Length: 234
Length: 285
Image 1 (cartoon, rainbow over the protein chains, first blue to last red):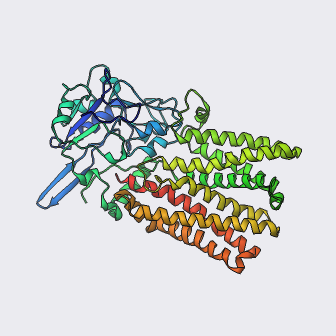
Image 2: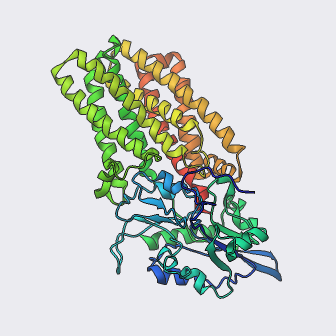
Image 3: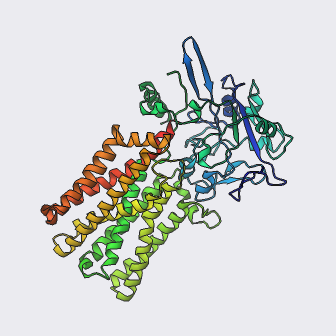
């Protein structure tokens, strides 16, 4: 049964159009952070900000403990709130492929897109960078648009040692991602926001996908780290 | 313990709250100046409240531009090729610019004392002025993932806050004009009562919302933000001035000015707490 399309910019099931998606199989993720490193190298992502990051939580009782990972990135939503909220059209959705990208030269730095993103996928680039003139604007994961249009896979997918990240066209029923999404139970982050994300997780733990109640009383060390991180950025 | 996440930052800092505060007062002061063409009691406010409105509009505009990380590109918001009308910020930018242009026209009209044109500009300017708190409210409302912000109350709450803060400032401008102070006291009392009613409703829906909303409620009512929101915003800045204004002391000039000062503190505190409160939980996700 086809799903309801609500927005004119959705690429879901549009004939002749690609709809790229990523499936992250958490049963295969070993938390090596190779994806973070590959992404940093691919884009010269500055210190203190990430296009993709891998938070984890230690669960269980000693000695039976394990780490649960949840690699994160822009969800390239079918109905992205960042595109809606940008006043100058600096954020846009590519019709063929569904990439959510940035016109860096248009961005005024109002941060409305950052405020509207439920996934914290957007960040502000610092004003001084060594190798590029793209500074002081909002940036995010591009699903490696420049690589994908040349027939390559995103840097994080290529480097993933456990093949936990799988990338492909969901509109193509023969693709691996389409098969995985169709045959295995998958989850998306914050489905209640109606963004229709294109990053699907297999085996995600809701301790990581939902707002944790620990924020009622965050450990002091977290606040100290946050402060140190802020100072470092400044 | 043993958890790891990267530290996310709040996109909109406290300077936005100052902008909301300043622009709300500017809009209300223009409204009071415009009202002077139709209500005799407000006549003494016509020039003074307008000039202050114009000054605050300039300050607000500079604050807004200064907060952009690419301030030189603020003109992009007027570029028809770029404008995205799905964004309330685009409408807000146009509203702000139109209000600025009408204010300049109003300034020249005020100097020439042209009553027929003054009445027309007063109506047009007032409509644009009320658009300012409405758009700032919508700016927050449209973010569906943000507890507290994502409420249809926001635009109305910001209009009421604008009237409260504007009337409070106007009461200082009104000096010892008793007839005008009576009117401004009514504005302050009923707008503050409206703010109070909306805050009760907002707190209720936040406390009984989803996990994120419930946690936001906790942040808003406890800790540092609790002191600002509940202490300064609700108790000292809304409940206390309402109580003051209904007492016999609140009918006297000193009472009105005391209430006005408290309402200004409350107006700023509420805007700040609502702005920051809606962003805290997300930084942990």
